[in-house]
Length: 433
Image 1 (cartoon, rainbow, N blue to C red):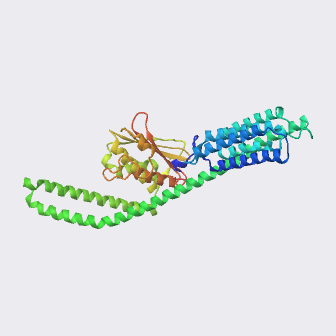
Image 2 (image 1 turned 120 degrees about the vertical axis):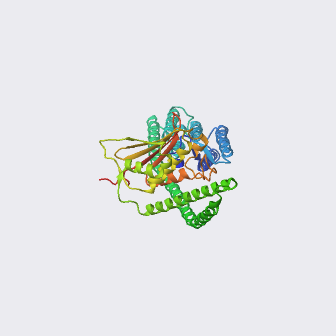
Image 3 (image 1 turned 90 degrees about the vertical axis):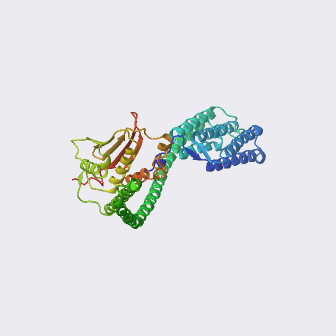
């Protein structure tokens, strides 16, 4: 898939708070240094105690933030929004006490909005933009006089220009930083998906190597077992009338049948290995391909299978070749359905100009919620450990389908039973004109 774990950033996704915490402490250090410098060095009159209380309040929020993220270093987006809102209000009150928009540090109101545009969604950033505009508007009309008001005072028109410039810059920075960070997040998400796809491909190669080695090594012991089974059957031929040996004779026959079944499976693995590097150049319609697959691979459950074709006469039916990316996923999902179905398994086929879709349905109990949540991960299966199942079937199927640009969606039907929807792109598969 492009992987389920990296499809989209969830609405309640977490934000790494370490850099935001660093920015907060730098801002608080700057505020404290500016207040002390103006009061003690320049000797300008300021409500010093009130200003220091505001800085201390922001510091307490910083300590709380550090304690709350000591373990995970993550914060929810809503919590980050509240923190940045507090920063705007705290800075607004400081500016109210020290001259309003005429204070040169009023430009610092842009900082929380810029941070929001880089880590939060557009709706949350818009909220902070509106809050900043409200704070700037209040500061334009209500504030303590500048500490140096006796030296000069600003004209109302100039203050209005400051307000307009601050609001316009806030909106511009929010839009620009938001667009740039959005592209960066998309690129990061794409790289993460590519990295995960490479990891899954590596797992597939490893599994393929193990399967090839297992098939090679199993050949000799299976031949030995077959010879011994034939010898035992030959020795037991003279005792077929003895009830004492009848159960041994039955076991020998079952041993021969299971051995032949293993040999057939190894033969199929060999055939599929040939197909993997040399796909058939003889294209057939997708419906004919499914019918032949049902006859060849699912003869033992033929009575359960049915196929429904939702043909679009205005669009030509896709022509496909026999490729492992088609055979293995369908075979795996049909085999899984056969283990849980009550009476029937339905195959649905439809297509449009861009894709063709194969749907596999059963009328069994459906997936357990615990299994459905991790379906597609290696070793995740309700049958893991039962009859040798390792929980790799769906993982391998998804990896093969995603490798060719397709997707698999698996879930439970409202009417009961499970449903798997395989979507393949016509491009790269359609061998027709």
